[in-house]
Length: 218
Image (cartoon, rainbow, N blue to C red; front, top):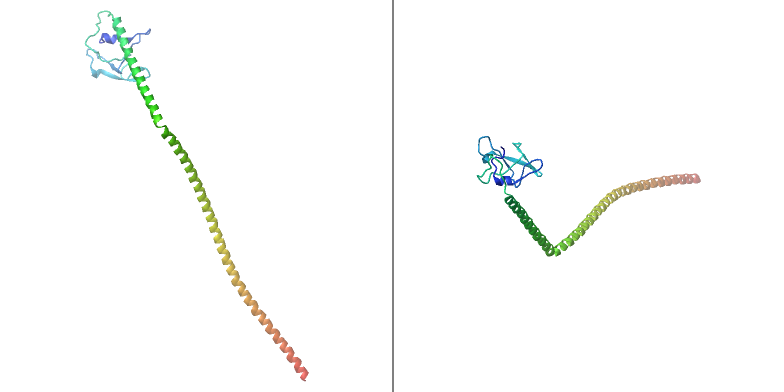
């Protein structure tokens, strides 16, 4: 029999259903396998993989898992064995009491944590408000930095335009100087041309005057 090594306490921890599926209460997640003809040893345990509320053995298809027998008292295979109803009820009551104590302890811990959080929030209320003020100041500072960056960009654009205008002015000045030099040269050329024409006219007049005077004397 698969369960011949179970003790009375082990059998008390079984929940029976209409499908006679065996579920152990409070299992530690280990499955014990008894080789034929040998006693159960710790080396014979197979670990289990848990999924949800059930269990699945890696190396065995046995539908149960349990702890090692707590004592050497074993069930015998010679006939049916009666389980004490009073012992079973006492065991269930003990398990429920343990559960209630755990729930009560958890509620106390949660109540303490809630009270502690409320105290911290109350003590740090001013700090929270100051943090909000600092966040608002930080936002304003970021806006000022953004405006300063925009002004710097505009100043750089104006400086670039001024540099372009300066280059244009320098080019115009150079062109103007070239124009002045060429105009002076042209004026000098025109002056010499006028003088040459005046000299030619004077020579022509002298020639006419000399010819007329010669004719009058003759």
